[in-house]
Length: 428
Ligand code: NAD
Image (cartoon, rainbow, N blue to C red; front, side, top):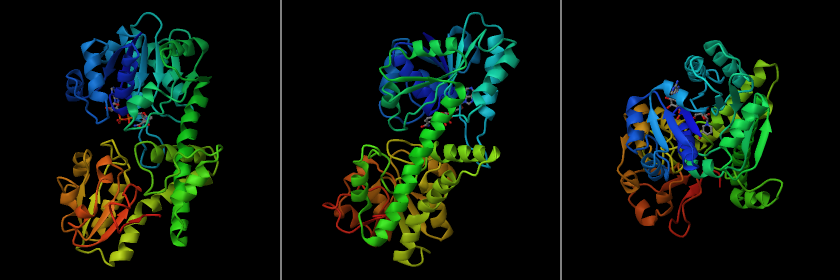
């Protein structure tokens, strides 16, 4: 099928490449001419393992192309809308990008013939896809459910594993305005070997929020347990191993650490909390998940201060800035709160990350950026390990001996006790 994908960020680009890899002919539509040029030359504007190779193959076979021309939607039978839905300042979802894309699409739809299905893939609070359908109707003069289809198809991919996750999802959720819209999306997903669940639009929207909120809850719960366990001299990882063996619970997302970040969990839990408050419900679990996380991000700085006393003038090596390994994404990354806190306490920050330094430089141009982990460690009083990059797993005492101090606190449980003698975990 000919498919258009609006938005060339993590979800848009990886969905476009994934759909093309399954045999569809995909046109990725973005606003930034430079990024479009890069995509057409086979250079991914984001870092995602395996993306470059797959893009090059699909560009060469003619299954993938990119443009900044919204009118090219008229040459496709389906459009996936993958624009950003960030958090507004007050925690509510900001729908500016989505509503503007819907208006643009509506005016293209006005002159289109034949049946076309619009699929909202962006994460949106319940009721939003109905609003998108209304905007499309208004801008096109056509009727949703009769002249064109509307679906809501939440995406569950993880950054860093975006392509394998997109290509082999645990489930595909198809929220449909009507049967015909859903049937079109079922056909698009026919090359995928995954269970399908068909729902109405609002249920599909809520499945995404419920999933992310539950995962965030597991993390905040594990972090709280970790903080308690550390005070009691109990290893929270052993505890959670025992807990996770219960088939009702699953071992995933029980790793205690420095708190969750990224473009999804913080904003999605906040958006659901705000929505609940707006409709007159006080969501105490969601509020507490966010509060626990806010505190957890700074727990590692609190412990550093405990060990070092004042941080004024202390050289602190930060290993890892991305919100997790295998990505250059720093949205809501704990590293940002940690850098801010360290600077407020007049520490000298020396940072290294294999992919994310460029993004952090835009926010904190004044800290010292190092060429590798050893460079960051050289002459430092303390080291905070913040991201689970593979290359940090190999660090040994001979690397840490480059420091002038001896305090090493890790937030990700990746250092090897056989290679590094003295270090502690943030909550173990
Ligand atoms: P992103 O910010 O990386 O990408 C969004 C892109 O949309 C940007 O490149 C922006 O320029 C583009 N865009 C906005 N309006 C446009 C328009 N009118 N025409 C063309 N392009 C336009 O965001 P993302 O991380 O890809 O997330 C997209 C959506 O998917 C969000 O709702 C997010 O919550 C959801 N989501 C993200 C992830 C993830 O891991 N990043 C996972 C699942 C779901």
